[in-house]
Length: 360
Image (tube, rainbow, N blue to C red; front, top):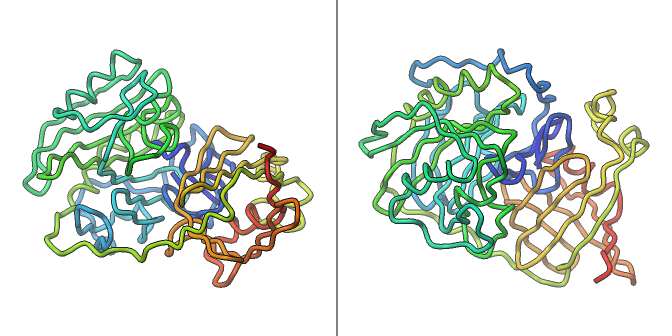
């Protein structure tokens, strides 16, 4: 779900809820990647408008509610003041132009490179991470430091090939390509912080084509970590999802240039925005998770969803898309957004055309 007037993080990787430059956001509005009101900068352009000062952040503070390792964060100016979504083991922020993303992950399981099965976390996570050089990963600019009194290793990670799930998943039962791992199109400046409950990963994701962002990532991550502090408050429990399975299945729909001209946001109707259409989306709803892919980019969206008769909430309660649902006799779904509209781009993508069930 992310990088156009609507910006989504590719593959929940470090690139998450999808898209590359001028791609469109998917429906959930969160994960990785909430919709933003401005187009992302073009590849290679960097983001010179985003500050990279190493001074202590002075932006608004954020205190987690549901994240399993509570923390407080003074947000630097290059990030949006509110996260795209907060889950028990994953929180993410984006930049105003969609070119930079900050991820906080407490991995529950990992997919070791070359494995199709997830495993428990390795005892020495840093050694496991750096060992991915045997599978095409590259690590540079290592720093051994502390963050809020906790031992921390910081490296810059890139890769020659996709390593889906190699950094970890925020839960069990998630496919590797919906978890987090190094990807060829991204450079990650990642901190591995040791805690009593296992490693906490914090990273900045930049496009490898945006050299200015990659160069600035060192100072930006230092600035982010300078405003990070662990907290001792209790973790809140989000209300349990209804998780009705009546809409579980695989659906597809295509958004055309004509759709964009008639119903899209202003950014969709620019020459650059129209270039991504037609774009065909495929959504899999199963066991409370919605997994969305698209044909115009390699990006993948994976978010929670809640269902009840006649209603779907795609994404979390903060940034997700709430919609009424009607179903044809053949199983086709028609979604209509319920105000307030938090993401006009997501509404356009997910409610303009009906969701047609995929046979089988």
